Amino acid sequence: MSCVVPVVDYEPTVLRAAPERVRLLRPRGGSVPPPPPPPVESGPVRAAAGFADAALRRVLEVLDRRRSLAQLRPLLAAGLVDSLLPAVAHHEGHGTARLRRLRVQPVGTDGSVAEVAAIYSRDDRTHAIACRVEQVATPTGLRWQVVALHLG
Image 1: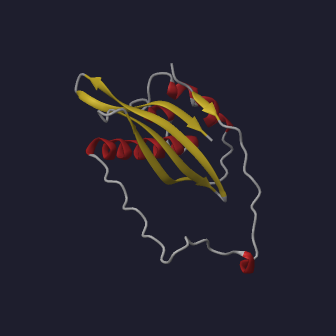
Image 2: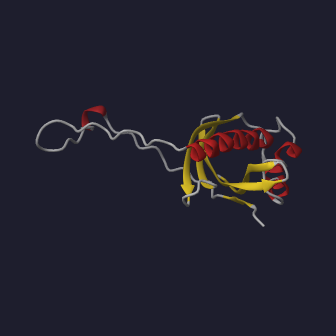
Image 3: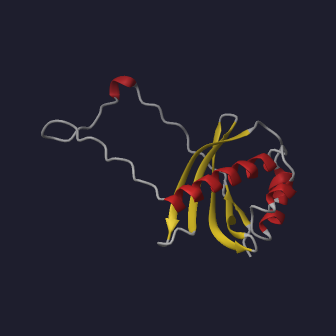
C-alpha cells in the first residue's frame, strides 16, 4: 500500500551577489556552443505528463479545500486518498497553491510507468511534489493512476 510521505520543510537562505562581482564563465577558444535541442517526447510520455498535470492540480485543489477529497478517488490508488486526510487537516489556508513546473521521467521501455517531479508555489514560497503514475487495467480499458505521492 502506498502512502503520502511528508518532506522536511527546509528552505536555504537566499544569497545575493553584488552585480559587479557576478561574471559569466565561458569556454576557452571562442564562441559559446548552442544549447542541445529539447528531447522529443513519445506518445506515452506525453499522455503520462497530461494525466500527472491534471492529477497534481486536483491534489493541490483538495489540499486548498477547493475540491472534495472524494474527487481524487478515481485518480489515486486505493489508500492514497485516505493518507491525504492529515495533510488536508494540517493545511491552514494560507494562499492558493499553483503548479509551476512538471518533469516526467519514463520508467522502463513500454511507457506504462512514469515518475513525476513538480514544483508548486503558495504565496511567496516554493514547494515540491512528486508522484509515480502507472497505467492500470480496468473493465473499460487502460487508464492512468497515481500509485505513490510525496508532498513537500
